[in-house]
Length: 115
Length: 155
Image 1: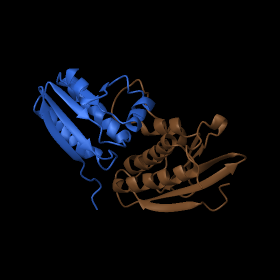
Image 2 (image 1 turned 90 degrees about the vertical axis):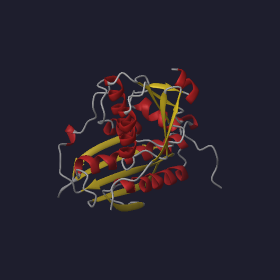
Image 3 (image 1 turned 120 degrees about the vertical axis):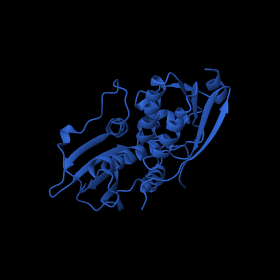
Image 4 (image 1 turned 60 degrees about the horizontal axis):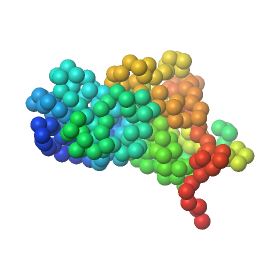
């Protein structure tokens, strides 16, 4: 049996930014899917990548690791990475990992695009 | 007491697709025991991280290896809670060597153990007698000043 499952991720572009919106829990079975899309998004060298997380009700450390990897890619490629619309539960894992001050986290998509 | 039979005992295979089911079990149980939603979510997260560590590091992503979860509901005095054991048959490692990464060293991975220790009251790793590892952890429902009382009664 496969050890990973698809994660629905919608793509959009606005104001020169690429916006990824994953929908569903991001755990060890789904974080590879998010990682693939993030890498594809950086392949087109966007000035900014926004990851809109309102549809992610749960994320474990594999999801957080995927976003840390995204931050590393963004720094290497001089692109901005902004996370937005985080649910309280997902935000709490960033706090536990003390990453809430490391990422640029905005309350909604408009403020993420304005960043 | 661990000599008592667990209230719940399940066996699952080391495939990440089963993590969601384990989380749902923990969420449902802890909320029924009276933990508030955020505490329930944290306990489910701790179990998820423990299982993910076994799958990733213990079994090195082999998907057909056994993992056992045992849960005891506890009631020491007025403070109910639960105790969880998670066992595997993976390679044994020195329990003292199990630690999370330095949080100031921001890089992918290495957060699972830190999260488990952060959200649970007690966390003990030990080698099983025969093979594999056992993680023993517990969490009390905080009744002090009703800090963790449910917001509704179970009638």
